[in-house]
Image 1 (cartoon, rainbow, N blue to C red):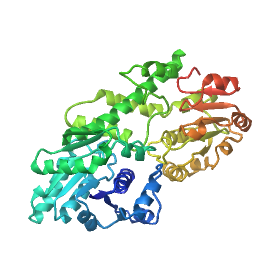
Image 2 (cartoon, rainbow, N blue to C red):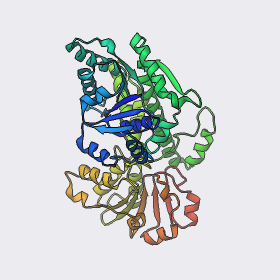
Image 3 (cartoon, rainbow, N blue to C red):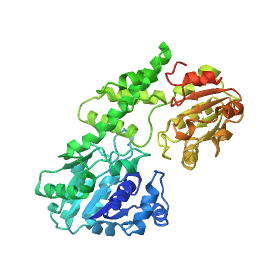
Image 4 (cartoon, rainbow, N blue to C red):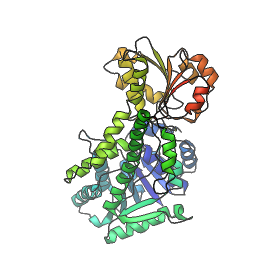
Length: 454
């Protein structure tokens, strides 16, 4: 099938590459000429395991192309995926200007029937806005609105495992209209996703608005579990309980399960923060206040400071003359995404208190440097207190303590004898609970986890 992907960012690239992998002819559009140049020269502007190899394989096979040509992109695909960004607006709602602009471009150039697929994470009612924008452009050219139908097909991709998630999905959600054009669109989507349903049916068909809400509801539920466990972990610290034992105790209940019950320094990234905020905003627009989600956001924001509080409790509020090694900058492992990363808050707060930071991340160093330049734009002296190095043990040399923020696999079993020798004080502040407190005690390392019998 001929497919166009509008937006060659995280979701667009993964969607385009995976659909091409199944034999479809995919045209990826982006208005950022630099991004398209990178892709056409064999590079990939984001880090995602397995994605670069898949893109290269399908480019060489002629099934995947990248361009800035809007008219060509509309002419190419019978199915047009809108996968552009929906950044949070100032009031927390999703900014739909790029989605609507993409819809208008389709309406301006289409001459044959098209299925328009909202792949971007968008609020309930966005399909109506997309349809209205396309219809307005079609009317200007005296073309029938029946030429198109808008479908909601939200993505459920975990950064760091996105290719695997797309190729072997837990579920595929497709929301269609009940019109004749909507029924035709449903059939085309069924054909497109047929290869992903060969083992068993994974697709859930529903109305458009239910599909739109499903995406937000899923992310809000996962964010809620994370904040809930962080609240319990902080309580465990106070009462002397072990949150890992608690996690196993409640996770064994089949009604609860083990997923997303790990305590830490809070969630970040491009999805949970903006999606929880956007869902709350949608509720307010309809006269409802989602109190649980308000609490989820408040808990998560506070949790980003939890390691700073532990450091301050251990060393005092004045950290001048002290140096801290920091392992992990990306908001989660297997990605270079620094959006809403807890590391950014932790670094800024430690710098405010006078500390020197020496940080390492296996993948996110270039993006981290860019983000640090932004975070310290008004404080060049503070930026000089932060150093990025290309080796985790180099970061620990003569440091007063090690701070772990991201749970990269490479951090799980370090050479603890070497680590002790490098550190000025054998102290670890573990924001991801990578190590067992008892083992650390036996090694002679002072250990501060999140809710771990500290």
